[in-house]
Amino acid sequence: MAKKFTVVGLGEVLWDLLPTGKLLGGAPTNFAYISTLLGDRGIVASRIGSDDLGHEAMERLATLGVETSYLQRDASHPTGTVKVQVDRRGQPRFTILEDVAWDFLRWNQQWKQLARRVDAVCFGSLAQRSPCSRRTITQFLQNTRAIRVFDVNLRQRFFSAAVLRQSIAMATIVKMNQDELPVILRLLNLETSDGKLDAKQLLEFGPRLVCITRGDRGSVLLTRRATAEHPGFFIRVRDTIGAGDAFTAALVHAYLRGASLEEMNEAANRMGSWVASQAGGTPTVGKKELRRELAELEV
Image (tube, rainbow, N blue to C red; front, top):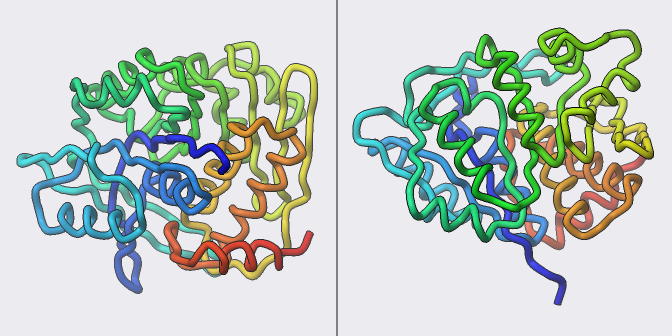
């Protein structure tokens, strides 16, 4: 049997509150779910409230097959929620509630043991908006030898040059979208002229791989020695919620198995496109149905 890797989504668990109803989300949640769907052991390491939404999140994650034993419970702060508006192109606009449970991630012995045995961990900038959670995420990364994936996710005002600089330096893989790249470069006082070449500057901070997603125009992967581009897939977009997280999950899935840049790019674009064709970031489907739907995507 193929090796089953343990991968962790570290950070926020929240409910996306759309006009049509609520959907479980948060980049780490979406990442862990898609990793599970691909056949790995997906774990969410986060914090939820001791409220009805927290209980419902636990039930939903269990239904999705995502391990919940590393979810902390908070009696003082509510489960995170985000108001989401989706435009005609399927692009979401987020209003993220503050002082919620995932702003108070706690470093403990259980998470320390997890950090020492995980194969990959994905973290972002949003969950580091509070000093408490930033310290905990830093401790997790310092205590692991895993592949560390920094999936940037700039949201509202919840990022800073200091967080970006430290996170990029601690990462094995850095992934961002084409709109985030110039913002990051300016904050880090780096040159901004040609997007693809500009991104290579980030490799000087220590990552092995930098990824730039370009929406319906695919993505670019860069290492010190090589560059690979993918044109993306033509699909009918339902909404783009979680599509970037699905891209990251498939990228990591392929990276852990020693795939080439071209193979990683293909797998990541295919999965990201499929999620964009569905509603929300955690669409359910059987593994046979997933293989069939992914195979039907056309370049």
